[in-house]
Amino acid sequence: MLGSLQPMLMVWGPQQITLYNDGYAAMCGNRHPAAFGHPFKDLWYDIWDGVEPIISAAYAGQGTSMDDIQFIMHRKGYPEETHFSFSYTPVRDRDGVVLGMFCACTEITNEILMRREQQSQQEKLLQIFEMSPSGIATLSGPNHVFEFANEEYYSMIGMGREIIGRSVAEAVSEVVGQGFIDLLDGVYRTGEPFASRAVPVELNRGPDGESQKRMIDLVYQAMRAPDGRITGILVQAQDVTERVAEQKHRELISHELGHRLKNQLAMVQAIASQTLRSAEDVSSARKTLSARIGVLSAAHDTVIQGGLGTSQVHKLVNQMLEVHDDPMASRFSVSGPNLRVGSRPSLSLSLILHELATNAIKYGALSAPEGNVNIRWRVSGDRNDRFELVWTETGGPVVMSPERVGSGSRLIKAGLAGAADSNVDIIYDACGLRCIISAELTSFQQEH
Image (cartoon, rainbow, N blue to C red; front, side):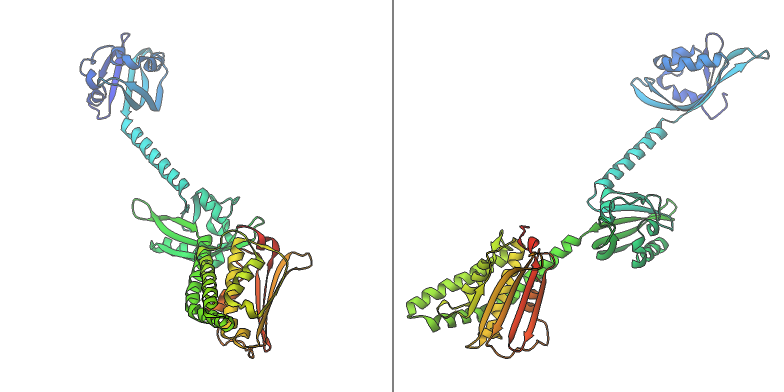
């Protein structure tokens, strides 16, 4: 015992006298060397309630072995948490009488505290992953088996899926034919990360498992063992579908603003021409011209602000007439019921009406002296569940389908934002252009 490098001690005789080697002496702290040759209880008096049952069992002939026992010791003059792995073995004479106890032990306090710290760090990391606004998942092995996925990842692929312990090909089978397994294989094979923005993905995430197209910011990174071997892949994904759609909408509006700015001089010229042609004198012409340019400015502000609250169809039409029509010799005929329109469809409808009027002045019916425009709207459909507006031009030059689609036409054909089942048909009839705008009525009138 005295020659062993492992900490060992013997407790001998009825008085339980303690004998130990140098390895065990280090575990005694400030109580060495005074404890050597004295009763075992004098050495560990502060933890005797925990030690006494074990040593009594040994003296009764029953050995004890534990991988980890915890004590709060004062061996260095202050309380400290300690952990030991040990075995107590009875020592007998030739007749089998227990004379003492032998113990081989190892202090594992540092290992336990380090393991606890590692576990705490893992729990913190797991909590960070769970709280992440992005979807995070870890995949293991060459078959890309799910080990972990946070709540956001489940939300992205569709709640209710059982994915842990299953491969990507099994758990999210719809992505197999979209090339993502090949991407994962490449990262696992080479260790080179993959990152891409707004990747289109078809996912079966609808209420009844129907396919939905989503846009995902995606990162795949190889995870490695301490020896450098690739063991899995960390997946970071964020659904940016709404953000991409909003960005496209902003780009459309921005492009439209640029297009409208280019048309401002032509519109002002048309307004001035209409005003001066019908004005009785210079003073009234100045007043009318100022008012009409003010209306044009207000219409432009509406576009910039993105629409404010609900409106009425006839108000949007009248706003367009104030800019483009001459009240003294009107060339527009208007009819339709009093219908409410939500803020987003309101903005789209206002833009479309102004664009149609601008094109009519530049190229269509209003570019000719005898040309006219008829605007009528109604509630249509078998269930009276659709909004429909028809713009009809007559008396203008012969109409031909344009060779290319300009930004104005793209704006018109984009339809009514925020309205379900929106549709725009432009008919290039030789007698005059016709534009039919329709949408599902409830969403057309809903405030967004």
